Image (cartoon, rainbow, N blue to C red; front, side, top):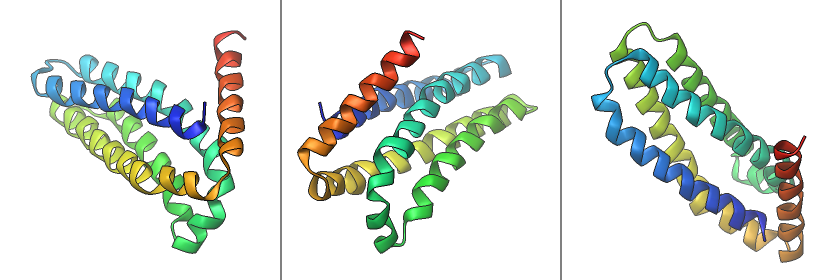
Length: 148
């Protein structure tokens, strides 16, 4: 399986999670509920982001540099993580909800950019064999996390 297919499948799961969070957030009654949702997103997003940075984006950096976007993709991952961390520091329910929903918007924007620009670019620039080898590397990383 190619890394682009794996990442798109992960994105599909994330989109469903974002839909759920956006639908339930207005009805949440406690800071703990909001922080729990932020934890779920953060625990899923961090390894996804690391995979993109370590396995996938590095071979494409020369393309991002030509587009003037090299720093943006890494910065967006860091921005999303920072926004999720700010949910934990929120002192009011409203502040926590607003920050969490802002993180969902940032995630959607970033994922959209990857789906429209980065994944198609990878399919054009990298060989299918390279994409499959990246997919195998992802499987090995996943197995190492699941079976330490």
